[in-house]
Image (tube, rainbow, N blue to C red; front, top):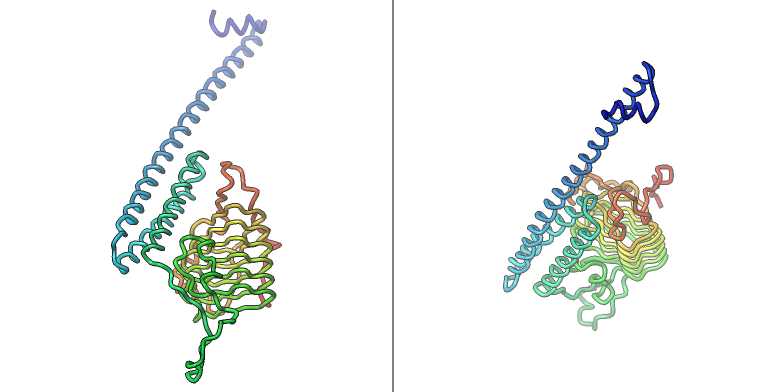
Length: 346
């Protein structure tokens, strides 16, 4: 029995009107078969594309990971100049690999993403250990210069607000990639603090244990580390590499940078210019808007930092605690335009 006869028998249609209805039913069935075949084809192609992307990702990721491991292995026994060059190369490659992972999260399975993140963390640990072994940190302290006639007197303990000692700095806690902090402010409450471009230009800067403070950092630091920040407003010029934030709450931050990594931070607004993708982990209530602080030498500081002013991924945020593809993380938001700061005057 053919399809038309089957439909005729099922429906009881007869005559010309029945024939027209039968033809309509036949066309509908045919179209449903075509649509179903198309859906199966698209699903198959989608799986194939995802598999191809995954294969490409892991092939590239593992190749770059092995390259970084080889560089770190070659550091053993190298003199200081060669070692410094190799560590800089490994650090640059690691930053590129972190960006490559961030850009690939949308098509990676949660398990694969966790494996890649673990591999990156292992590389970061190896890099830190190699740096600390080959280039041990120098002890440092910022002291007020004394007149020549005072040189014969016994040195007094430094009590200046900018003094930072290795015990206070907590650099290893902020991020293992910090080789040394060359400029900093620590243990201050209810203060308005400023660092000039001359003080911080191309320096590693640490701000730690600050409460209810306003901090203005002019110039272009190399890295910026924020640790234990509570109810502060911190504005910084272009940071040529990375900003690391840990244990920050109820604060407003503004800075341009190449990379942002934020840990253990709550209820904080970040006015950001970033040329890669921002990363948050173990955070809650963090919100983002484009960097909007301005001061007379900002253009010059951008030039010194080497950052691209035309590339800003301020709203591209990867949450390492949120792996649900296609569903926004509940741990961060975009600040509505009407609620964004437009004036930063004291």
